[in-house]
Image (tube, rainbow, N blue to C red):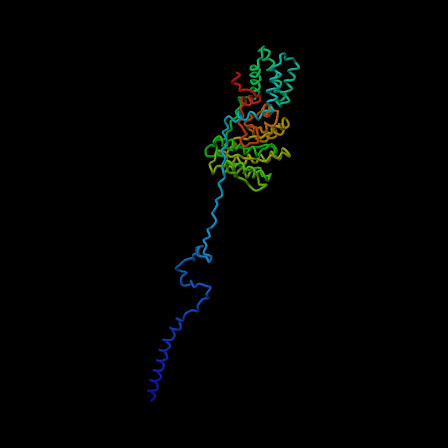
Length: 396
């Protein structure tokens, strides 16, 4: 009997286990609850379909195709091409009209008198001194004029003009080297240091010098080492941007020597021809200026020697400006003078005085506010412009 009970229990267990094996898989395949109607079931498709694709604007509920606004690209900055420097002084000669009244009309009028007595020669001397030629140079010019007019005897208009022109050109020392050393050497760009007191138009003139160099075929990089005036670096960068020249600058009140060093290093890396460095023009005391410019010079020369140091002078300051200029010549080795604002003064003789007192050639002259109104200085062309008459070759 017990055997029958055991068999019955075994059959019952087998039936229960078999039934469970049929029910459990069905429970596992039970469908997930449906999503809300506002959602889309993408769970099964995400891996295959990749990121969702936005519906085209034409599929929107309005059914209207909305085109995106056109993309307007910013216009590329216009790079200016400076006019050639050759012949600039001739083209700008009319800008010297105020000085022409002194030299052309004034001196030639006095020299053409029938009788040149002592009073007439004193007037000639006074005219030259008033024009800022300088006392010593004036006496030399007048003495030579007196001797030559006495020897000539006759004095036609052409002879007088040639005579005066010859003496003025001689006083300007045409044999001086007025070239700008701006060519690179052995992979290192030429370095031009620009110095001068604030108010002389130094930073503006620095920008114009860059245009002169680019007009003559040089590639230029600017260094904004005048870090004590907030607007100086911005101004220089604007000038450079107009002709496609890069400007290296530092934060306001940064060490000028550090900025100058970085500018030359950048010039080496970019293989430009010339690095033009604008320096501060503070002149509170000579010692401070000497320390600052001396440091700039020493630091820059770690890359190589400075090729040019150009001193910016305002022609309208006359003889007073020469005393300030002398401080710079004692601090750094000034190799050339850039005389600005000659169009705004009747004292064109300041060019003679500058060279006499400083012993440094005038290499560039500014004759206007235009970007290309800075011209290489040529003594004969300058005298032609001062006298306001036909070129010398026509009178010779």
